[in-house]
Length: 113
Length: 114
Image (cartoon, rainbow over all chains, first blue to last red; front, side, top):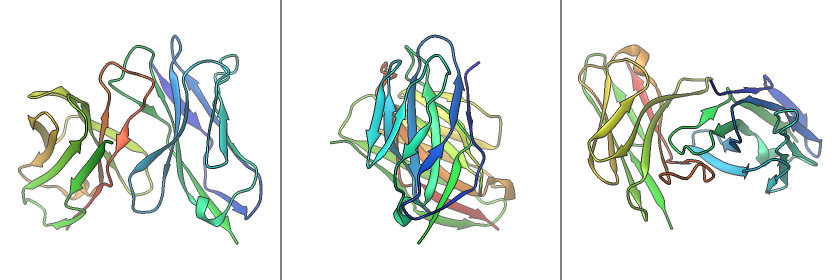
């Protein structure tokens, strides 16, 4: 079946540090890949997505590249801010199906001033 | 544009009491609808999804149920709450037949069972 594995948190960084949150997946075919962000007490927001191999999704300074050869979709940001403190979820949607997303377990990021 | 609403935002209920959480979507037709639960410090657990009025699929056996009385309304219910039902409940919608768009989430309901 489909699965998503995220690096375990929590992750604590200083402001302006470089961020990487690893995400690898298992799926047949060509799934679509997503990163969601959840700020404290809120629902999940779609941060970025990539729908085919070598696509790069980007938003708010965050980037992730769909790597089919390594089945990965790592989230990166060059310089984090305190306001980036949140939980980040990697997810996949199987090709040809919009019914369900498979989520990773989430990674808590805390950015210190 | 599409928006998704959930209410109430917070709820404190005693064990054994009934539950009704409501979710509505605006600005789209015939969406796929989902209920998730997020326990404290944990990931997301898919509870139910629906592809149309009256069509509900259950992912996890439990004392919760879901109904879709209207195209853009999704209700989560329980006849008797358990302590283990406490958590953050999220409703989401997606475009039917389109796997590249992802799902869009509501603001959530924080349920505390005492």
